[in-house]
Length: 361
Image 1 (cartoon, one colour):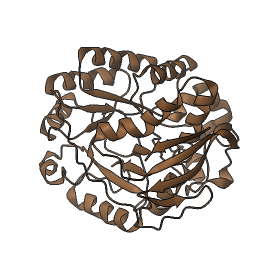
Image 2 (tube, rainbow, N blue to C red; image 1 turned 45 degrees about the horizontal axis):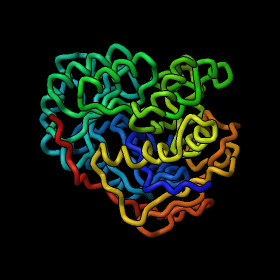
Image 3 (cartoon, helix red, strand yellow; image 1 turned 45 degrees about the vertical axis):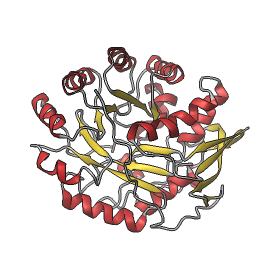
Image 4 (tube, one colour; image 1 turned 135 degrees about the vertical axis):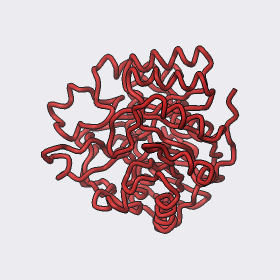
């Protein structure tokens, strides 16, 4: 069975380049995106120089314009002690605002609830806000959603408790959406014995009961988006004295979801909803014409580090066999990946234009 997915779209990646070009470049990582079946992505702001002011934003945009091989958009980052003075100027150049409320890579952590409140109040209505929020912090952010009634996307939710809090918020009618990552769907803390530092990411791997809760939430419709949280580091950094947190994922996410279909806990139509229809609807980006990815659910593959386009050259899933192979990717009527080679030139990807701003009561 071959599944045609309309223009897969990953709203949560960290592509590196610029000050971290040794980890990966926009050229290498957008090639990885196309190899993994993605036609478009949204890049997070915490790769240095952090995208928290117009100068840094313009520098990153220029690099994407000359380098990207798939379509793209950029998140703007909230920063200490507050950078609200830039919001009006940048709002039409970015896909939304990202707020880091728990510790992660970089220095954009915002723990003060009053500052969070001022930031959310200042961000223009109708443009998405995405948050890194874990456990009790999820409830802290929901208090602000309740007060401001602005749409907030909760990235990489990883535990049963977080799902419970967000399910209650949905029942209450709060304007929230939920993203989960393939590493939390397929790996648990029990895998750390074998993976070592290659299994370190934020949020960290959880118990098997949390993984099972995520899978159930995926199938029943509570979860809106599967996002890769692609975050490559070199092997030297992963095995260093203080291991870097983060894993690559653009090349493995769609095949892993094919495996989920094979195992029976995900329906094919739901797969397409999670990686294309829902994220495009939530973040306001319509489907480009004549754009699709063909995922072969009838064939298996063995993930192998030697086959990766991502510059880091490793995956926590290397050695795993999955039932799902990306056969081709077409973008605006042009084949950009033929199952073996990336055919799109650097700079051929287009910046996404947000045409459908949200209106949340």
